[in-house]
Image: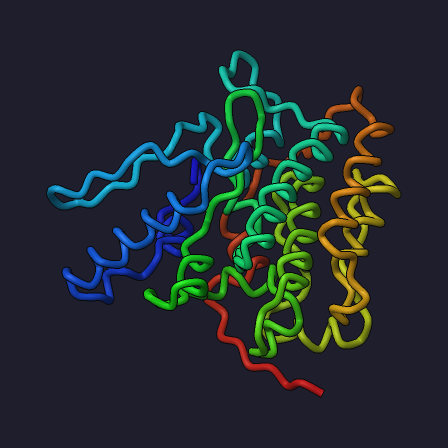
Length: 285
């Protein structure tokens, strides 16, 4: 992640080092095969090949110059005069990019694949600001059961209540996480529920609380966020409904005002607010 400290980058690295070398090689080759079998989609990174003759094994994907969306959002917080990479986000651009991610997620769901890790950290951005959904390690693990599902404290504030309660994830769980992604985009990379600890999150949600409306967020965008983040899965919008709302909202969204947050990201504060390193115990009523 551009500009992030090593502890944040390492936290997102699959824990394959717990496996022996033969098993690790099998998992990496299996993952590459899984990516290839997904087929081509305009909003999934294209897999160009696999280097497997010698260690380290490498999966080669297309270059996406702006790298991960979270780092890109953090760079958008300030004007960078002379920067090669564009960092201007308008509300319409948010609608466009989030619709691209939703299209890729819908593609996975139609193949009976849950993503399980939707968030700005799991989206890559091209030079032209096309957003492509990535972070498919746990999708591979759930689909094939040939690798460990890796979860950590950095995922908790993006997870739906049923996942926090250790129940089975569903497509509706991905929809919840997609709502959190929209919040990240409009805040230029704020952690969700910044004033609530991981340990208190379940009880907070049980009381009917939800994400507070960000200052820069329009009514139409905030209504989509709320429709994704209902406590009961049955009350959430389906992904098809979300896509329709995004497409409709894009037509009327503001394309003039650039979203700005004057303060650069404070990494230590972000780590704390995002729940890194917290233990988590929930009481489910």
